[in-house]
Length: 240
Image (cartoon, rainbow, N blue to C red; front, side):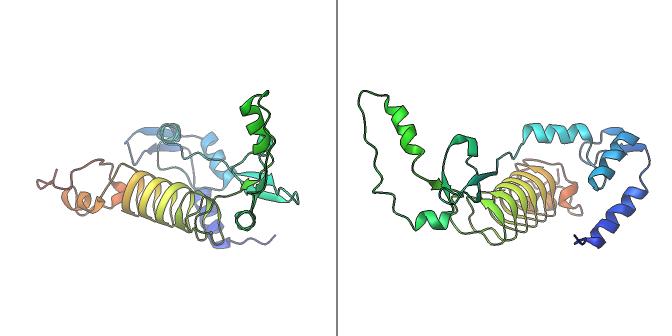
């Protein structure tokens, strides 16, 4: 298969070719660590640039602010064809693509209740007979891999989002060209954002709201992604 991103790969390769073991400083915490041959080998194996965040800090982010969710290949309840869903195939839940499910009427499906048996046991048996929505989309996504979509476009592995050109996010509303967003509004060109809104070109931000005030009152000349300030009052007037 032809390489679809030759310019990108060439740029990454030029970075990897110049990597040598060296001491590095975390841009977020100031922590120092030594990037050894083992670490460099990992970057080259995955064809990605080196971290500018200390590995220990990255592990903390992954542990404390996980945007975890699951996508599974279940099977179409009637044809057996693969259908993407958050219902694990081992659960026994039968699924139908959303548009097919909404076109059907399941109100005629009944189950003969037996009062001598466990109610929940019978409820489970009935549950396995009636197909579930595979994706639960509110607004059908376009060219996206998503679940519970609110209108995603060109986004991948997003859950309950209204996003454009974004990936690996949960609850990202009006998100564009961003990744690893968890509960964010109006997030643009940003990475690893948690419970924040109105961010542009930011990285590793938590609980930030109206950040334009942060840039004005904290350090007007700084770029947002270099700021580690969290919960700064928008009414500050002393520059601190």
